[in-house]
Image (cartoon, rainbow, N blue to C red; front, top):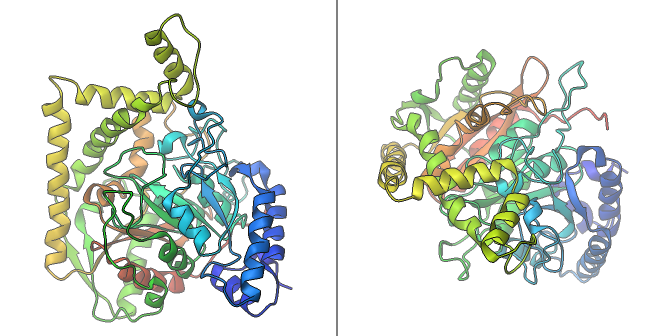
Length: 491
């Protein structure tokens, strides 16, 4: 029998339907893989008993012909999603041993469709980071390594545990969130597929908030087809989330393999940055040619406000974070540090409970929202955001179906290599991804090649609002042309 952990979700679904193996066998194979890969630090909490119980229930339903679309499929859940009666910490000391009495909408939909919970995945603290080094549980290690080197590399962030676990075959797919690139950047660093849906496509209810106008849940999977399968279960209107949009959820999987003939794909001139590595430029050109060969028409487009996206993002996101994280005060739940009075208790709890990067962003956010600076920073950043959104609207109004860009400015870097002395160095990793969040658009990262050291590189496709189907169709073309590649096993 094929190693069960190497199957895609689509293949596992067929195997379960044909009774080639059971959900329990599939789950046990993944639990064994997780045990053997703890060096990667992808999981912060393993739930083997719950997994076996859910697999048993899935087997019973499959036997009766009542299995849902994800019946028996073992998944990992980013530790930002509330899971009922299972510890959820956002990988922050301040949430310590928080056990939610409720389930996030996205995960409840996955369980409704028969998926199996393997455990909670590591992420940057409160999703603030681009390398998964800010987690209170320690950094996640990328299963990929440079050829001939043993240097431990980052998997990207904030959904580094999700990307690392999928790439290392420790789950068949994973939930993730994307506020400025936190699905697409780790996907590009690990040769996995990650899609950030249109803002409002997936419910944010029960997901620990970072920046409410930017956060969006999405899947990380091994193939575009698998991402489409997961996305169908994750998406949908939720009356509990006022930003959730009531738009019908299409069958995303049906878009896989659809012809892209006649589609207009924009190539934005502003994404050609000074000093961009030649291999990123080469990969971008190759990706464009693959789409052209499949019948798409390439057109040069302009997104003139792109250069303001990163600075505007790093005003808007910390401002919203400073407001959202005010609830962690030691009064109602989470960590509480002893003190002589309530003010001192707030101060001690927040100083001890938040890590450096979270404190940095809360301070920046509080500053840009303060009297005298609100108009100069926050209000101006929101105006820039409107202009960024209009740039994309102008492109789509000219008949452009999607926009092709690099996903990241480089391949994965070493743990501890960036951002130590200068945090802005780390923020620059989001240069190609933040525009999508600022405009509320869908974006997908697909593995497209490797750099000279054998590390994976990804391409990004940006779509029109609620047109994720086009991204899946175009992403599949890139995936077929580039081929699939897996990390050589060393752990």
